[in-house]
View (cartoon, rainbow, N blue to C red):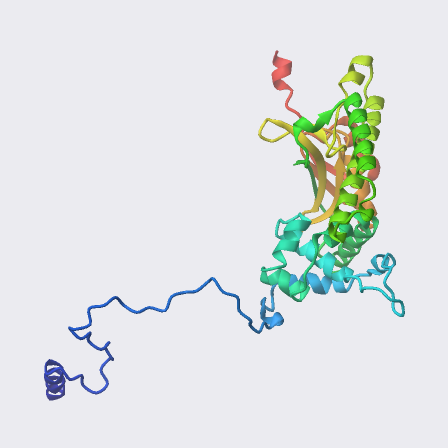
Amino acid sequence: MASEIGSGQQAMWAGVEPEGALSRPAPIPPEAKGAPRLERVNRQQMVWRTVDVERLIGEDHPARAISELVGRLDLSSFHQAIGAVEGVAGRPALDPQLLISLWIYAYSEGVSWAREISRLCEFDPAYQWLTGLQVINYHSLSDLRVGHQAALDELFTQVLGLLSAEGLVTLQRVMHDGTKIKACAGADTFRREEKIRAHSEMARQQVEAMGDPRNEELSQRVAKARERAAREKRQRLALAQQELEKLRQSKAGQEAKQEARVSETDPEARIMKQSDGGFAPSYNVQISTDAAQGIIVGVGVSQSANDHGQLAPAMDKVEENMGRRPEQAVVDTGFTSREAILDMDHRGVDLIGSMEDTSAQAAG
């Protein structure tokens, strides 16, 4: 053994590696004094490549589960609104299963904008798998969410039914709370009635002065964009006038009537206090969650700045979605009132809620 080690060492000292030794990089000749020659990364290029769409995401990726779940639902209400039918000329419509799957997956990832979903479809592997590398215009996504509200509510009920059948929703205990969601409107967009009427007249005059975009030498895309913008602006201003009327009816006195204001860009929003102490145009979103698996069983949107009186409508929504009432409802101080306690007792629902601390007031 010693002789073998000795012979190996002698071979290495002689500049010859013994058999089985680790390979070493060849020594650099003394005359090679130039810079090292490296293969640089070239990102300023376009390439063609073969993409296996099925391998874009793993077998256990949530996008696969969402697509399969939506594929099992009854989407006939979405199909009824499609004008392109077999045997008649016209471009095929996008499959509602695809659009719904995109929205559900996007919501699960915290994305709620049609433009952002359309952008993600260009490079994100999960969105590419859902679309099969197909280009999805954001208008198609937006039109589905806006134009099929009733069908989407029915879809939500179907999903809850499937989860309940699998034992994932028990309704033994439902947690309910409200959260303020900021609207897509700035505080400087709120106007009184005279301003709303003036802007409505200006919008009408602008539309008339613009003429018919289809008669101009414009591209079809630009013409449709102008028509859409003009139509949406007039609709928002008309809705703003309706919201002003609702505010006038809810307020009493001439002074309150004069103070009534609504936003031109999001007329249904109301100024609400935020968690940071500030105020902003917002909606009060009411969410009911089954405590067993954290599954949402009811959602509502209110224009009320506080949660008082919102528990009863929330329980109605849960019963509408699930076909039965929860056994218990857990709420915070904002929902706990005499009226709420009596209402839950009448429904047979155990109410677990905190009461406002009035000890400081009693002491004063």
